[in-house]
Length: 480
Image 1 (cartoon, rainbow, N blue to C red):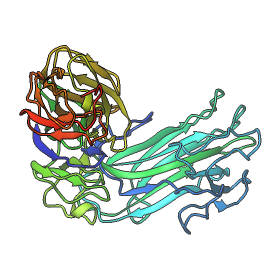
Image 2 (tube, rainbow, N blue to C red):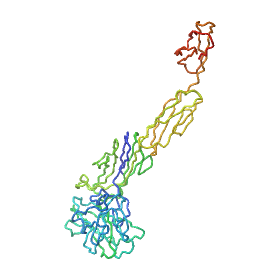
Image 3 (cartoon, rainbow, N blue to C red):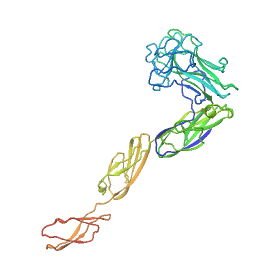
Image 4 (cartoon, rainbow, N blue to C red):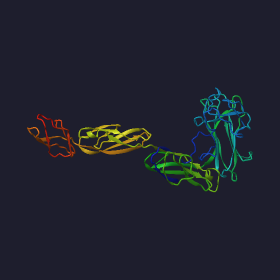
């Protein structure tokens, strides 16, 4: 068991963090395929992708078949295309086995010659004593009657092209009346001591016929095969293959890895980091990293034969575990205002307005705590306070990824001011009249606004001390 901790200092950006502890792909597979974990392919032929239906021919020597630009190539020919929709009603209409947009595949109208080969290449710089898997995805193209179904032979030769190190025959690949079904076929073998180079070849083993021996190939791979490497996140007492995180938070994750049926000689184990473009050579067991816009990834490698040096992957051929996924979502920034702060008086309604920033992911929930035991889930609520107080009002917002943040500010709710005053009445014009403020409030009064209804300007005072005002004319005056 091998354990590492990752501490994420996630500050600002949204990303999907895929922690790939080098995994075998899930597949419907046949025959002697690797039963443990696989490493990165030494050879991977996926034929590319493009918007044109047909792609250029394969390099010379890769296949013994003749290239054709036809949707339905003649016997002994092949085409590289991203759909068989134009081939008529004899073949199934299909895309490449991964379903990738524009993904190409090799479509073959095979001949009856068993010496013909669909694919061949030389692989060099391998580690002796290491187990490899040679595999491909294939399917029978014919819809109904097939007098001679495709039959493939996977062979690994020494570089003399004669001495066989391993071989596997698929047997007849049957018609599937309900629709074309992709399946993976192949074999695994152990590289003999002293050998480092091989020739891998997929050969025709069907006698052919009309209609018959029409097939499609995709994703031809040659990759290391080793013991089963299983990894997971440990969250509390639970193990899981995926966890959620949010930007702006600091979170510690423990990664656990277990190797089963380890037959490696002098094995090494390594966590590896990827910041979004390519895999680095290693990462420490205790790994601190700031994740920005690009995804960060870490994977666990199980490497055989510490003294073997290969030209692949920094001189070694590791295998790897299942995929662990850490999804990091945007965190919104909560904020709000009280839009009618002048009305923050007892028994007056206070309107609250959300001013949160979504940061790229829509906010889906609001939770208000008005500080007096009352709550709301509206985006822009109103609330009436029954008791004067300074209330801590808190807003928590969350988005569809579950990321949330909170913001709090105070709202000062006061009692109403009751205005009142006394006046020393003068019965004569041009005689001073004394005004004495008698207003009451639970909070200090900070400003007095006097209006005398005699055409003179209003008087604004910052003190409640008595003062005088002289009226120039007789009559009734409404003083405020």
